[in-house]
Picture (cartoon, helix red, strand yellow):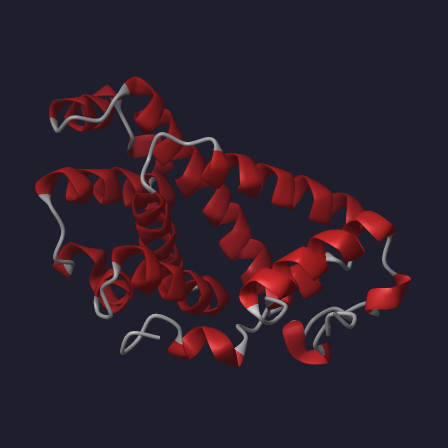
Length: 196
């Protein structure tokens, strides 16, 4: 496979580095992702601007999605609900595609982005989204009662931790994506729609 392409317009506020100028471990990680996805997601191109931050960001991201007791669908639902209230264009589009794929539902991501309260989800998952969004919008208002509600609907202690961790991380991600003006790849817009 040829070297992945890092698109110059992956972000608007900072220059995107040339692939061949990156440290070997970043080139390997980006090549793996490009091979898996069929394109290089622009978040990889953008975070490559600062290799130490790239490593830390993707190590934590991988821990959140690989070492979680939540379903991957639930992880992506949290990401999109949080990104929706934060108005993060990159994450709404990119993770909206992942919601469509993991949920096998072409409309759920749009519901979560526009108003997560309108989403066709179970009471249990709505409680999860309520707490994730509250942590996003009013973190000082999250109380023991919110965690108690998650326990009542059936989440374990580890799942509750993971809900908070995913929401917190993607608030960081949203803010960096917005600050750098990261742009979602065109490919994301069509993924998970009409059986694609």
